[in-house]
Length: 359
DNA sequence: AAGCCGGGGTC
DNA sequence: GACCCAGGCTT
Image (cartoon, rainbow, N blue to C red; front, side, top):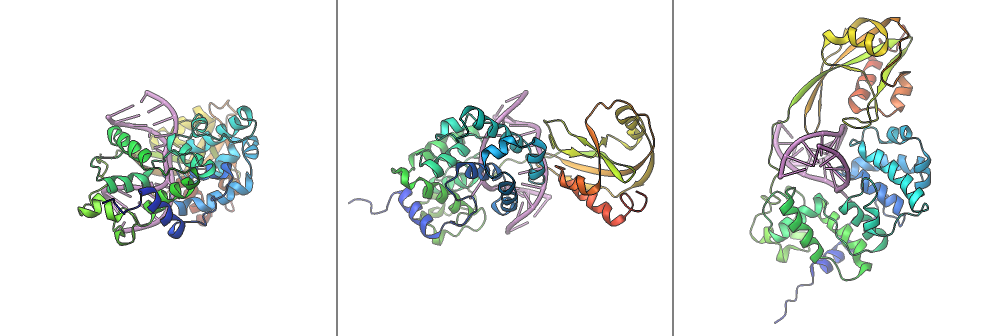
């Protein structure tokens, strides 16, 4: 007797067409928009991305517009979204599309994966959605669905486990390229809705009949958790240097934390401030308020920020080692600045000290 | 293989 | 607070 259960891909695509998401703003046939959404969605949830996506496509409607824009404008649109290398790579890749592909977005996953910021999974998503290429994605959603469905033990970030999952994902693809958009979207939708990390809704799942985790009552333990490590704590002093109603911002180096963004100058400790301002900015400063410490949490460390207000008492008109610029508050808030700096500048509005009557 | 790179949603 | 999110790149 043959197994009456339809193939994995058939159950998933049918479920996606009936119950999946169909109204996301990037569900178009424009590979530029699909690409942009995939980059924004890397390690970032859908609800967070939507307003950024809307602003970005309004300002940069085509890949040519993006390629022609200054990097600073791109970073300003990305500010607050995090992982700023994504924005720099997006800009670089747009220029590569114009230069190397005549402005037409490449049509195969292999070609897409040569562009900066597009890895195997992102390339597969774009190629599957836009061109029906029969190649699988493997993102956080898919890892959760597959480890549960096949009962795969081990942390999915580990290379050996990840390779197993790629092989499995290949084997489960549909036969027809016309099913690829619904299949790819279905893997994402299932992982984002029914097959959630906690309390999955197995009763409504199209895969429950042969899902190992469901059958064996192991949905709570799969996927295997990431092994946890202690995160270090660092501290810094952020300098709010005030002069004639403006504040001094410094452009951060292109690589490293907040790469390419405009940020407040930093000192390792309060005692290092005067020397630093003289040597780096050619400024004599007087101390103002020390504002309450603010804790900013990153994935791999915690940063304790002590904001120190300073007033310029004399300018030595010395050559600057770094790129700096005096900003009006309103202009600073429009630039590409890190989230804690934004919070500090907005906080100062209420205190009416830094940008107030004295300016 | 492990580290680096943000910010926020969710429980 | 812990954990994770439509990951990719560097070392």
